[in-house]
Length: 453
Image (cartoon, rainbow, N blue to C red; front, side, top):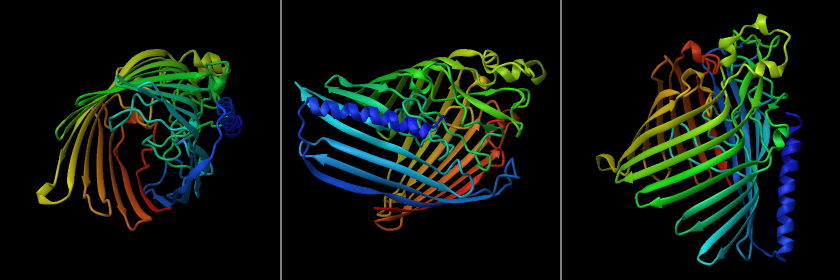
């Protein structure tokens, strides 16, 4: 990763120095009024009932723990500092044993006339989107793919985040000075691609590499029952094109275990739209985006073979991956049955359709599988008891391929500090065209025993 941890620390240090300069320029005399230390420790285990795609290196069980403390400090004016480090230990995959600074930012705010402003300087996490199966418009942060294949866990992103709130809506601007490459599981890790990803070699379209300055902006507002957000991003893609370079990789057999793929990050421009309409017990949801500059993930495999390409360089190989301009969308709805059978429990039913006009050429985004013509169905049973007991079930089916997955989660508080999380993820069937993205044997059961302080 080219000493990625040191570069990430350097990016954060630069932003924090800028925050210090702003404080001095404003003659801010900081007097701390309150502080709080909280967080969690989680003991975790995953069990894989089937042998992995690489049984000589992969095991059927992995254990570990997560430590995630959070420090919050506030001064008498309400300005604050938040620091949230993260550390995971994994017994099976040294790559999955990793640390991150999820949040480390200074929060400043004030009023200007009838409007309000807010500035966050440092590392933070930003969440955009309204749908459940995937968040197409959510692009500011990199995904922590080592944590979970659902793509919902994020790495901290160095940023300058400015928010302007007025009667006409909320306007946000993001300056993103540093790109964090996605880290993929190692040889001993499960839930990985068939071929290995070279985490130490990362290629960028920009000559500035990970230091290319990225920009994002979003406008959001509520119009009665309709919540809407419009966003734009210009900079380095968070998704990597996986480049197959002979002799380390056979372009005709990307699913070969001996292959080594190189992540490549292009310069892209994305326009996004997210909307949610609330009508009583109904929620109607939409996410859509238009993107240009992304490379086609499978172009090389279809157009060339190993014999023709052997001996030529990375740039020549990259030229065979087609650059595409495309649109993608997720549309769906959710209905909640309240107080079912006279109890305190609620049941929510969800259905969504995922579309990507590239079809089978689509690059996997937040998940190992491409969602180009897929239906998602889910159910949430919330008991609304003092233990906050919940059961979730999700089913994903590809309308044009044979891929089917089923997931279930159970959450319950055992006491004020202890909680239990049990999860099952099953690959019911896998289309041969999808095998290159995810191990077809990597269904798993997961258990978390978590202590909150």
